[in-house]
Image (cartoon, rainbow, N blue to C red; front, side, top):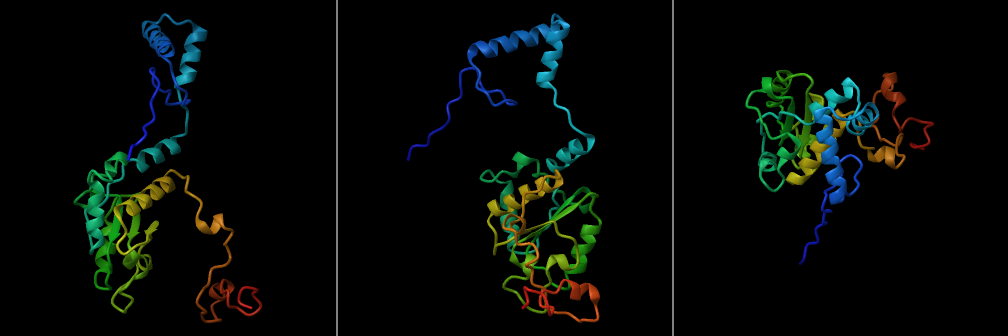
Length: 236
């Protein structure tokens, strides 16, 4: 099968505007850059040159961008999902493209905890202690069905991760492929940049359709969100 690759113009492509550059345009830009370095550009030309090449932003966005492109995951695996997690640093997925390849052996040097596998009740306090020792700000990914919803081990010995620690992203699968974990990491990357993708509930207008297990009616906070409460149209 023949793979068609896009052929770039002779002068390359402008990364900011996305426009194709001819050899002549590229040569003109080189000459203007030389004149700027020599100090030969006039006030108007220099101001125009700077406006075309300077991007302005806020300190908060710059810090969020830096954090989202330099996460340090903890070298920590729980079960079979850890094998899939290890492979994201290989050439096929290459997590180094996004700056996440520096797995740290100490939680005090890590700011991302990937819970790759099932978590038993005995292991939960250990995982929580590792999470508490990590750097601030820190994030967590529940990788696989076991750490997200107990998976195939739906018994008294297994506990989901979000029952004892905050979880930012859940990656489903048993086990999820490395590409699925990369998708979750990119979702987390956008969350750190304060530009999260729209969830499926928002995209399909499904807010308010959540089903909550009936609880004690003496608790007003729980009964207020219970869809099975008498009088609620969803529970009718």
